[in-house]
Image (cartoon, rainbow over all chains, first blue to last red; front, side):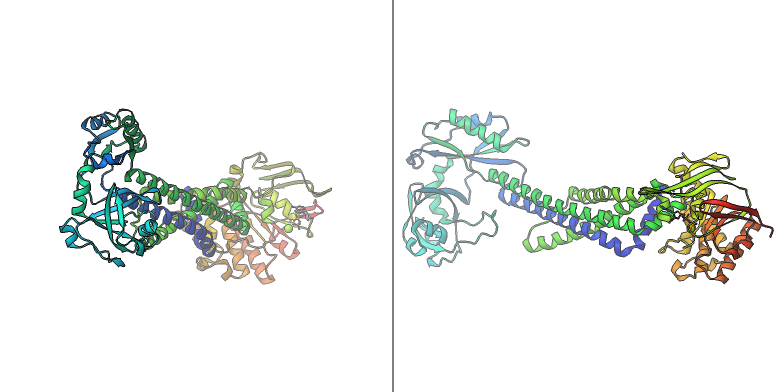
Length: 399
Length: 227
Ligand SMILES: Nc1ncnc2c1ncn2[C@@H]1O[C@H](COP(=O)(O)OP(=O)(O)O)[C@@H](O)[C@H]1O
Ligand SMILES: [Mg+2]
C-alpha cells in the first residue's frame, strides 16, 4: 500500500471513529494549550518587565557604579569622587564600551535612608509638581518650588518605618545624605501592582530643592558604565569594581559599589525565565500524561478494532502497513490536537494578556514546540499500540 | 495448484496436545469447486486457514504452485494473501464503519492501487454479485445475504487464484443460502474461479465438483461429484 493511501486510510479511520478521536485529542489539546498559554504569557511578561526596568530601549546594558564614602561628610564637601583618570581606567577594561558621569536630568534616585539604625534604599523623585493628595499634612506646592523649600512628602510605609506612624512623622526631620528636610505630608503607600513594578516612589522632593543640595555633589559620585554587547554584565561589573577598589582615586576613603537596575533586570529576567521554564516543566508533565492518555486510547482502539486488523491482514495488509496505519492515526490525531491546542492557547493567552495588560509574545519557538511536541507524543505513544496491532497473530484474531 | 503432503497440526494446551490435522494428503487443481464437509470441531477451519496462508504453524509440506512458502517473510505471505487468495467468512467480516464500496476496495489498495484507480474494478465486481446499487451503503444496512455478496465481491476483486470460504452460508437462511451457492457455482463455471468451501450442510454439496469429508482431523472420503 502506498504511503499516501495508508495515510488516507488513517484519516478515514479517524473520521469514522469521531467520538473516540475527539476523546483522544482532548488531553493533547489541553496540554498544548496550557504550554502555549504559559510560554506566550511568560515570554511577553518577561520582555515587558525587562523593558520597563531598563531605561534605554537598546540591548546595551548599562551599570551605575557608586561610591560610598566611609565618612559621609565627604559627599557634602566638594570633593571630586570619580576623576577623569578613573573613567579612563574603567574604559580600558575589556567589555566596557564607555564610562560617563551619570546624566544630570534624572527624575529620581535611590538614596540610603537610616531606618532604625539600618540603611535602606528608598526611591526619591524630584518633581516640579505633585498630585499625591497626602492624607496627613499637605502636598508639595508651587511655593515650595519657588523658594527651594527644604521639604519632602513621604509615603505612609516609610513614615511608619521611621516614626512608628504616619501622624508622628508630620513636621519631623527627614535626613538624606546629611541634609535635613521637613516632612510636610504623608501620602498613602501604593499597593504594589506587581512585585517587579518599581515605579512608585517613596519620597517626593521639589526639584529646585534637589538641585540646590544634591546636584553638584552627585555629579561625580556615580558613573554609568555601558557594557559592550556580548559581555556578561555581572562579570564586567565586578571587574570594574575590582579595578576601582585597587586603583580608584578614592579607594582609601570608601567603597565602590554597583547599585543598578540593569543588574536587577538581569536577575529578574533570569527569575522570570526560570519561572517560565519551571511552569513549562509542569505543563510538560501534563503533556506526558496526555501522551499516556493517547497511548491508552490507542491501545483501546487497537483492541476494539482487532477484528478490523484481522480483516485487513487477511486482505493482504502487511505487518508494516498495519503498524504504519496506527502510527499515522496517532500522529495525525496528536498533530490536529496540537494545532487546536496552539490556537486555543494563543487565544487564552491573548485574553489573559488583555486583562493583565501583558503583551503576548508568539515566536517561532512556541510554534515549533507545539508542532514538535505533539508529533513526538503521537509517535512515541503510538509506537507500542501500533506494534501490538501489527504483531497480532492472524489466526487468533480471525477465529 | 495446492498440494498438501503429510500435513499434521497440533494444538498444545497446558499438558495435553490436540491432534487437529492428522496426516493430510491433498491435491487441489485449478478450476475445482471443492466442498469440505465434516462435523463441528473436526478441523475444517484449521485446514482451510492453512491452505489460505493464514496459519503457518504446522508440520508437513504445503506447496502452492510447486513452491513451499512456510519460511517466507510476512511481506511475501501478505502479498500472496492479497493477490492469490480470496477470503469469505461465515460472519462476513466486513469493516462495519466502512461503506460497501470501501470494503470491496480494500484488497485493491493493499495491492498498490491509488484511490482514484479502483472504481472500475470495484463496480464491476459489485455488478457481478448483483449489488452494484448498494455501493454507498454500510454493511449494517444490508441483509445477511447482501453482506455475504459484498464479501464475495471483495474476495473476487483482485482476481485471486482461489477462494476459500468458511461456512459462507452458515449464518444465512435456506433461501439466501441457495442464492449464494448459485452465485459461487456460476463464478466457478463461467469465470473458472477455484473455490474451496467449508460447510456442514449436506444440501450445499450439490453445487460442488468435489467432496472432501473430514472427521477428527483425518480425510475419510475424497470423491468427485458429477453435477
Ligand atoms: N487456537 C486453538 N487452540 C486450541 N484448540 C483449538 C484452536 N483452534 C481450534 N482448536 C480446536 O481444534 C479443533 C478443530 O477446530 P476447527 O478447525 O475450528 O473445527 P471446525 O472448523 O471443523 O469446526 C477443535 O476441537 C477446536 O476446539
Ligand atoms: Mg469452523
